[in-house]
Image (cartoon, rainbow, N blue to C red; front, side, top):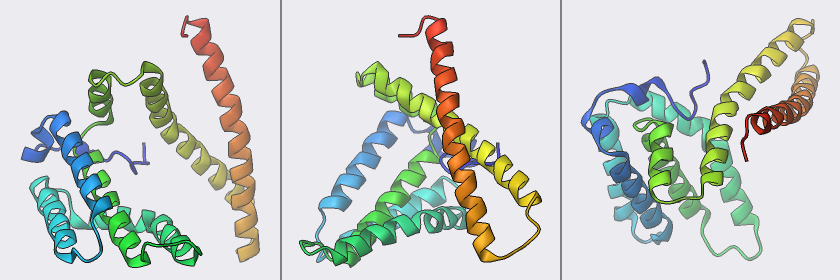
Length: 204
């Protein structure tokens, strides 16, 4: 498939980071996330150390810096949105700069984990940690059909664009809104069919 936001071809590469057990990488990721979240803004050197460790890990894993930067830029609007909402909040007590640094480092950490560890390995670790099977099944189905919905959305948008013979900006947003609405309806119908098929095969 063309959509590799969560898992790219780099996940099948061979490097010291890729060969580490998934349990170690998941534990290290959680440790970095916790340290980054609780770290105060005055500890700028700690933020720099975390960033340097992520860059070194990406270099050892042979993941191109441009690839990670593109993924960070793709997700940065969400980070900026959180920072703006936090800064405009009347009860905000965390500076927006700290929100940006924390969110950026956390995103980079998760991206590095997802591009060095297959998702199936992460699910295996969660199963060994005795995470409820229903949650693991939900995560597996969500991950599997995320790409299916992305492919279907691209086909719908391409078909709709092929029937639109104008490049006005208003028409473009109208097409996107129409595709999003139709995709929601199709996703709901597909989920019902999948659930009926699973129940017919004895799934509970």
